[in-house]
Image (cartoon, rainbow, N blue to C red; front, side, top):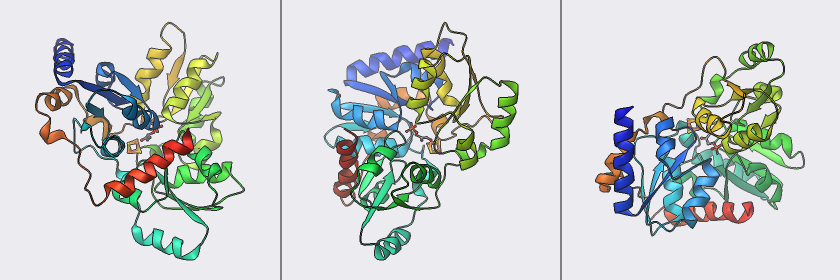
Length: 308
Ligand code: 13P
Ligand code: SF4
């Protein structure tokens, strides 16, 4: 704990010297969330970055989050404490599959989950996150939607919007797909009164068991507003830090599936790395190539417009 305290103090000093702000996703390790100025879901982090006065943004998250912050703030310096922390799902889409579907439909919108590479964003019409995917797809003028890369979020959107024809892609989150229905049922048997919350990246049969489906932020808000005592939480365990912080002093209990899903990519973002990137920023800086940036930026800006 001594090291955590010393590092936290060092980070606070370096942050002030560099006019930096620290943003963290709910899945990074708890001590990293604690040192952040803001903790949020993917949408909150993308939106926040635009409104902040600081010229340097330290993004404690995975690569696509750093790229999104950079694309929306080309004038600012965006640092990723672990530039190698990537989201495998971001790469699970091929241009050829998009071209094929585009050729088959005149009236098509390619909707890109923000968990995607900058390049995949250039192939797409609009970005979404799990907190606004249904709202944005509903608002799109096109009836046909190709949803990339996540098939689970895409299928959830399709179920919510029967008036749309949603075409799915084969991407998935390797962490959320480890959660299965039997694990949820086992927890429901142990805690029959529990509220079941699930991230829409979970498989369909897990979502069928859920009382509430939403983004990380959505689940945190739902649990905080609820009078229930027990919650079965179908997502990555990193979310526990904020669930406990927001519900301190209550008797609420949070139960995770037996596989205790961890995002090994988010786990790579550690306090020593946050300190290191503030000490010597250059190797940690996010760059999006000039070839990709303009078109990728448009799809992200469209998300902000539609979500407003
Ligand atoms: P949220 O948008 O809910 O924060 O989710 C991001 C993510 O990577 C989930 O796996
Ligand atoms: Fe990607 Fe899954 Fe990790 Fe989210 S939890 S960042 S989707 S690997």
